[in-house]
Length: 251
Image (cartoon, rainbow, N blue to C red; front, side, top):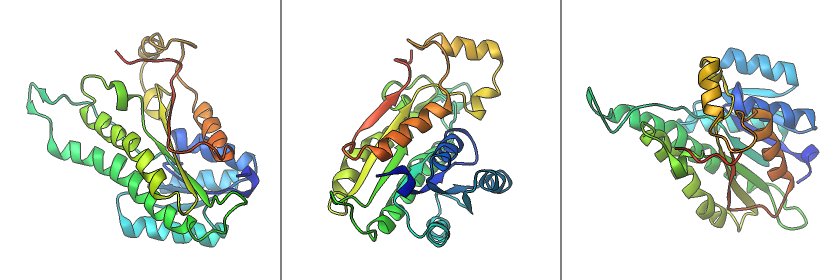
């Protein structure tokens, strides 16, 4: 798919990995609709880069359907969906106060995993209406997993579960959507310099970077965005999870 022909919806695009992706795709000529709960920040970014915005709760079917309708009105079609919306939590299965909160676990699963699936399935329904390319393609979905899906650390049981679910849905979803000509990929980032990590002390960030094989630094969201852009343009990538982590294997 040519980047200038891309009409993308990006969740969580008001900040972090999603923002970097929205900026890069717009800079290279794609149309973009930002889907986020951060209204003020999302609208400001959309105005800055010439994108569109739709306030969206990824866990709510009606909200995502409304966002897709907004995107279709603004862009004319949807042929790319990038899921970056997500949250993290740090809580062990058993700790001093007792067992892991079930509400906390459900919230992480609901936003990260169910939200990703909700957006992917509804975006796919719109992509299926697109005319096929010469090789039968109608769109591409890029979901965000994490290296925690494969080597989650202590206290990451909820987060790792949600990201492992995203990794696990990649191939079956790609197979499900093959008849419609829709590719499905997932990216598993390592430790990236997102707003959450930027709030940590410099010394803590250096300690995190020390575990990265090469280069020994935190990932730049622009590098995640570059991989999304490559996936969109490389039509033979399908049904796979790509780690982008500098060779990191979590302790």
